[in-house]
Amino acid sequence: MEIAVLALGCFWGPEIKFSKIDGIKKTEVGYCGGTNALTSYKEVCSGTTNHAEVVKLEFDPEIISYEDILNIFFKIHDPTTLNSQGPDFGTQYRSEIFYDNENQKIVAEKVLNQINEKLSGRVVTKISKIYNYCKAEEYHQKYLEKN
Image (cartoon, rainbow, N blue to C red):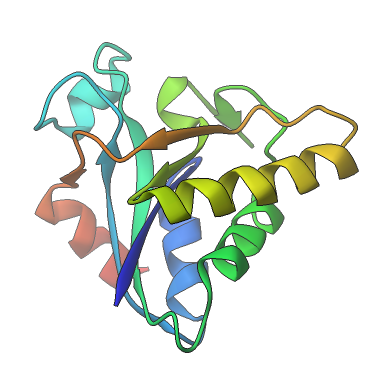
């Protein structure tokens, strides 16, 4: 099993979409890329932690490749809007790929460059090493289960 950590706006919709894909074994919502190892929804929404809302995926690379996951990532959000997706605005809604290892970094750069070429250089998606990831609070999981 491998993991992928992706920021593509509010994490609820993407988590549901990714959970239905063959080869994705587990999904989890959280925050990544901020200044603190732990944070809360309230702190993230304040805009002071620099965390992005993310979906953490556990996947079987024998069934779905990291490259395929990234291609889906680029299809299900707008990678050309800075710090926003739909009605959501703020740095926590940015487009960012957090890689786990050097191979993932290479694949992420390749896919991003291909998409950027197709979109005439308008992609604002960042690529960063996973750092300060923390799972969202339990009440978020309860919300997801209800919807």
